[in-house]
Amino acid sequence: MTADPSTTAIVANSVLPARREALRLPTSDGLTLVGELAQPESQAPEATLICVHPLPTHGGMMDSHLLRKMAWRLPALAQLAVLRFNSRGASSAAGTSDGDFDAAIGEQLDLQAAIDFAVRRGLPNPWVVGWSFGTDVILKFGATHPEQLREIRGAILLSPPLRYTSDEELLSWARSGTRLICLVPEFDDYLPAEPAKERFAVVPQADVIVVPQGRHLWVGERFVRIVLDEITSIVAPEHAPLPPEWSGPMTRWSDL
Image (cartoon, rainbow, N blue to C red; front, top):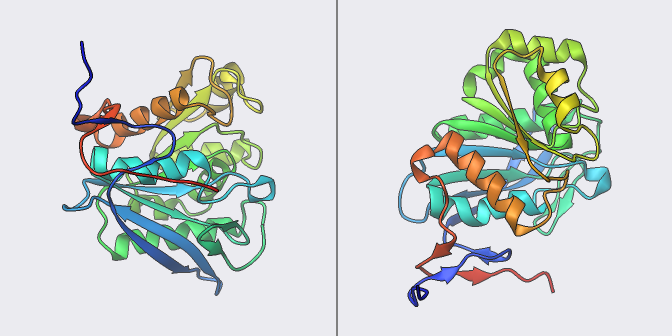
């Protein structure tokens, strides 16, 4: 079978069309966060991803590779809005957010600021998506502010280390009843598959999905596609699985 000459393969640095808006998000404790909202180019989004990035003290930011690939691809391929931001003290090419790293405590106010923005803008069907440290921020936020969970449809956790989240906070999340999906790499560096199943067993509504051969950082296009397909199948199932090619305009990101 010959390749369709009218389509182009989607690769690691492919950037598909979207309406991209630079954001400044105010927090309730007086900080301003740098962020971006990417939406489908010519129609309203069907659902919204609010992304919380990995540990900023180890390089985590809104441009961490999984999150920026969500923003580069999912508005065009799955009709999703993708909201990313730098948590307090974190930096990316878009700039540096006010404040300092606060070990998943103050960062809960950062997540609240993003959720509040999504609600004010009327962005539909919001889901929070955390990666590594971002999963702890989400879990602690849900335990501390369970009433705020009514604003979201659920949470998707990528490589949850449960470094900052206590068992009591997991139980609080269980009592909220809010949907929780955990994508756990089989060979995660911090919380591999079997220990993850044991820890999340206290949350009846948690669905632990083990990704064979995966590791904490999801390096490689194979694993990026697995993660993006899983997220799409949860929040916009009619668009899953995502196509590997694109027939419209496309640019390429360069870090050089």
